[in-house]
Image 1 (tube, rainbow, N blue to C red):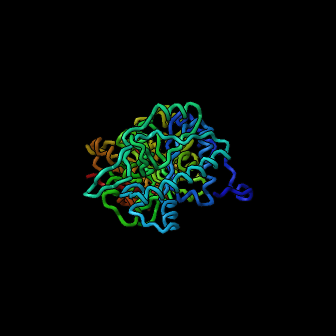
Image 2 (tube, rainbow, N blue to C red):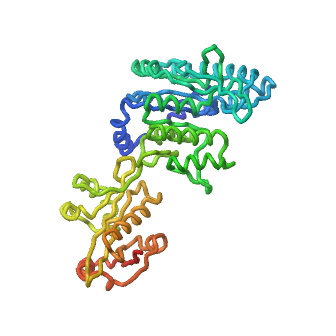
Image 3 (cartoon, rainbow, N blue to C red):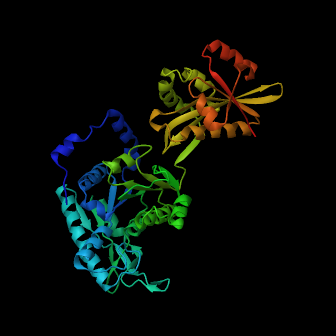
Length: 442
């Protein structure tokens, strides 16, 4: 096992006050919640693994109840190659014969010992738990899986007792049946079954790689349906380990775990960055409304003013007073991400000569959340709101974002004469010479 050197510690960026404030948003909602963290065995041989364990120590120091699960695919494969043994399966999903279970047991128990040693060096109290009641997986598709197991029950009481004593339970991907036989388990299945039984707030898969779209861009969040579809398609760009995580992530969410995260464990401080920032650095699979647009409330006004200030300073938005927002609060909508406001849009309505016209106004997204399609979602929401109000067209005024409206949202630049009379008067008085854009609502 490797450890982090002093030089590496000195090279780590120091936390900014903004980072610390962001973390403080999450601490109250995470305190006393159960997080099941499962990391791929291959990560245990990499230099950054010590940092992952330090991140776990940080979580425990925040009174988050942590359960650790580890995979062993890399270690099992390496030991089999060393002994000249051919494996039917190395990840606990397929057939495990007598030679395979011997290799798996030796590799996993050595791993377990090393992990306990590393955590003990960090002064973290841990205990290896046999809280899993398992039985043989049996015959699947005509194949006897022999020493591959399936989890029958999780001993919640014993795990709760350890957590209550501030001891971190460690669950290896092995189990023991009623006859005393040792069975190989899939670590992703272990993590999810434990999380379901403990009603965990999160499952975090710390993986050898992240989950990306076909263009190689990180998938920040996907729904349960999307995770199931990706697993079903078995896209060859996702290895068997990632497909397993997608399968069990969907199961976890369906069985009551609110969120599952897949994090690239090779990234520095990825675990904390994923958990203590709105956008994260990995992929979140969610069953609830992680991201939503809702009506603004009076209590949102200070936050709206604060968020808008940078756009006002950049002359992208008209300055607004607290009273002006408060007086039209019913026209404002807030985009929340994980319970925190990150953007807003307003929809004002006018009626002139029997025609209803909507104005999309005060569109902004926090600088830290730009270029993530949030603006498009807000515009689409505003258009749908205008339709529901019976408006036939929607207009938008912009000094700097008019290309976005034209190229991304299908708006057309027009003249100020297209504005309702009362709005045209305000336009002339402002002197901003904004571009006027219009779109027909179908």
